[in-house]
Length: 60
Image (tube, rainbow, N blue to C red; front, side, top):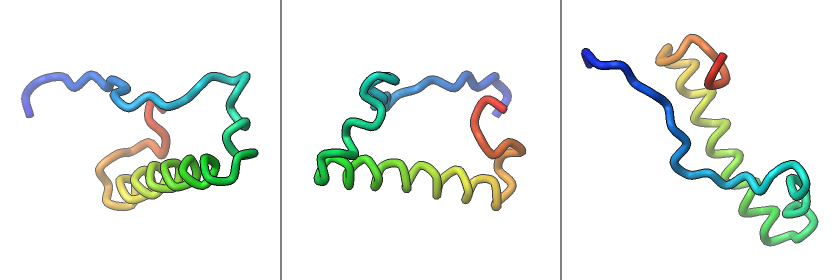
């Protein structure tokens, strides 16, 4: 595109390490988090398979 791209987190959802697994104890919230996480991982895998990125994880 002719200009440098700087990645920036725009949908930050992580509550921090202290509460990282707490949501999975509440079934409904855990299912919502699993849905979000699954979509993110599918997107990462799709980008890698389509050759749009050389790294599997951002920042590698």
